[in-house]
Length: 231
Length: 354
Image 1 (cartoon, chains in turn brown, green):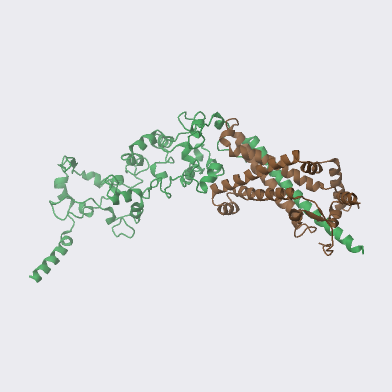
Image 2 (spheres, rainbow over the protein chains, first blue to last red):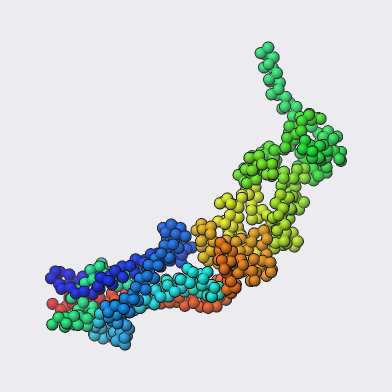
């Protein structure tokens, strides 16, 4: 917000094309899954009724939900393959692994925000917040796919699982879905859109590039690493 | 010539009204009061023409005379077979005859019985088939053909198979054997004059409406609750997959009757009930529902209440997610507040510098 006047800023890549496409497919499928899922979750309120009507009835709602689920499942399989078999994905993933430093950063950040300590936390490519959101969504998506498949192929699942397990799965699918919804649609969207630092939007998801100045402010260690490489 | 024609016409027009003076019951009873008075119809059937006058005297129409209803009888002996009595002569809203002020006849005309009768279906019932002829009594009169206890028999005169199923059902037994007035007879579910075929979307027993119809009693503490029958089943069903889909117009999924049966409904403890624990796999496993359903379908409560402690692990999981959601929301709000505070702090520091 305060530093956009310098037009000769230098930009570096933060999110490559492959990740950008993965991100777009992910959020499109998640938005559709959320809308069609919330419709069912809030089926007896005006909100749910509105959503169900919007989606063309209860059966169309189910079809939309399952279609987006297929997209999400394919993306997830691709993502795992990308992490495991591509060098690029592998190195990116290793930067997302949770380390002790993340907990320290979290503490430093809190102390700083509460005016207890004057020190800033300095981040590598991914801050603890970004890692938390990645893992939150990652674990969430795994739970949702697993429980969702049980509910989708209920007749097959019930060859093995008793009825109460299906009821339990239903509760987990709905509950976890709602938590992921809040985590992503409010927390993550606040971080990248509404936060004064990024308002109206952090455009990395489109351009893949971040200005060195901004990188210095948000991910100082990564900034040092990149500029160090250059020298 | 023309004048005589005109005179004749006037005479003909005036004749019925002129002669429509009431004929006393005694006169009719000269013939119709004789036991065994009958005639052979064209079809070869014997038609009983004897009228037991005491029956009429005990009916709601005791103050009426024969010609009030058999209005086409204008002379004794009458030359033609009188037409079937039309009840609507008196039974409409605004009638001056002292009949109940109601427009049930209009409801009847829209019903499946009324429409069939209008089409000329000889099997379709008109008023008399259900209410009787000379023996019409008030609905609240136990001897009325349409009193609560007699309705099943009255409907069963035509709907025999269904009657046979109904009398064995829990509803039939409770009403006919145990005389519980809260138990439903035919009309409590199907309606009375406004009865429609189950396929019609406005029928009370159409898949779209049947839940509401069952709920009328099965959600009521005053009606079924006092017999120890659970009253939460309907609302739990309404929050289940089946219930939500039915509410939004899906016709593929199970409504109450799909599992519990209709006229043959039995309590789950009964080994013949389709929802008896041993029959659940078969009931769920209908080819159009969950083919191949096994015993797993019976493991766990069907109308499960995730918000009740009795549901065990389902309840605790639901509670866990409830608090997880609340915690996430709180963390989120705290995060945003702290973040805003931090940004404003950074901004102030930056302003101070140069």
